[in-house]
Image (cartoon, rainbow, N blue to C red; front, top):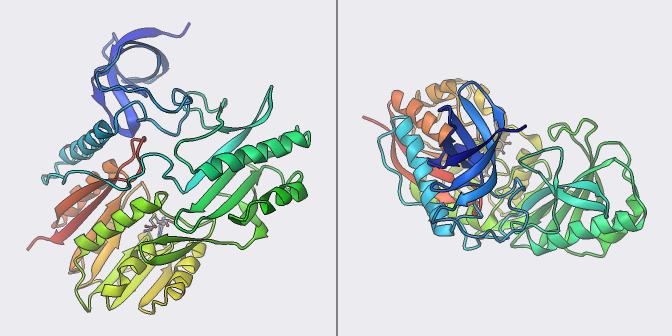
Length: 438
Ligand SMILES: C[S@@+](CC[C@H](N)C(=O)[O-])C[C@H]1O[C@@H](n2cnc3c(N)ncnc32)[C@H](O)[C@@H]1O
């Protein structure tokens, strides 16, 4: 029998977990709960000093709890803050950033968090769902955070656009109408240019063939918004080992941030909240404080969007990125925007050598993946007399850890700005301006 205990949620921990204690004193982490909730929890996984639980019943709700808009909220792994008012979500994200800084002994206080976009729902420009066979036929489903083997069947998602919701439903209906019962369809994905109205559709199978390909393309053709469609194969259901085939339209779509236009390929990273990206890039611009003649180094540059956004003020921009398709997009993006002071290099930032680059007197922008930087990379950066370093992060834990490493090398944060790019989720973006202490 699973163990059930009454738990008082004391505070938020990282990754959207609420923290309480079991009767035996161990910490228990539970999703979709708020500080102040008293709940009946099922203990689902235990380790030596830690357990994970799930909510069975709310005995006394926190005063900050609200009714989530989404009926799938209790199981779906997409949102974890929908049961909290937006004002409170911002407060929690602020506290999370500040706690990470204190934990890493970074003494500077963060500025007050700002919302990235006006939209608190329907803001995502990229979303992925799975197929699931049900007694009512093939359906679209989302990751179930309690049981990855039983995805949650969803008719819609409040984070994605109305078009994506409708089109995913049409794809499932098409396969039902054709009597499809196979197991080769795995996932569907849409990327969207929110400012251009262009969509890229991707269907992912676990075998080499795409069932009813002709019929699917006919359905795609009925939607002029879809400018690009791919059939992607991954035999082992591994999203890092994909083989893509263009089945309709062009291999890219376009999106705009501010006055700039960007092409996006399926392989390239692009900010998932386009409106939020503009707020983020404006803050980066403010922190970088670019003066006429400055040179900018854009590390982990993706499709070159930050560098291009800042390029009009600079003498030269050099972007470095490891994904070749993203570098190709970045080069094309400079051309599309008629910008000729940007250069993009395909390289692993963690393997750059001191002899290859000189960053003295330059403005360095760093926007790494969630895992953040390494001690070696920070040591290498500290050998330069750069003008300013702007560190952009989507992970408060690695951000604060890296700020600690920077400070050990005499590089100090002057300003830290959290931005909420991802309403209804625990995620938060952070920008900081770092300078060398004299
Ligand atoms: C958070 S994204 C930032 C992209 C871009 N700055 C933007 O705003 O769209 C991180 C980028 O780092 C790239 N990346 C990951 N590991 C890398 C590495 N070792 N060297 C260079 N780039 C890397 C990813 O492909 C991705 O494009």
